[in-house]
Image (tube, rainbow, N blue to C red; front, side):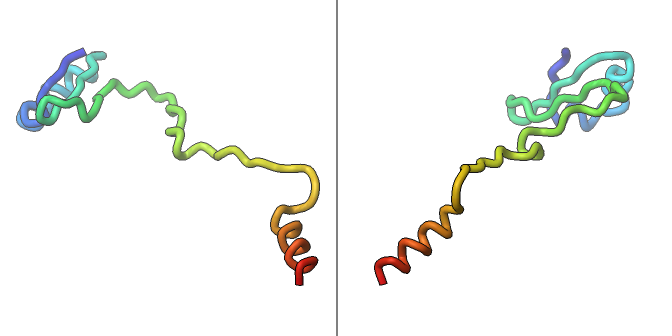
Length: 77
């Protein structure tokens, strides 16, 4: 795994892409902080990010909460 600055990558992109084609992984740094990872293409789809996965749906047996609230309001009128 090689770490290179974004500026260096931009200036020498063709050479770095050739390295990636040969199996090298490159971490891009901006102001010393990692911001991206360039990896060889595997052809296999990656798992979607967590924010794209469906969330948990909670279900409660019994009546709907909104109906229970409306019924309780009617009782006190």
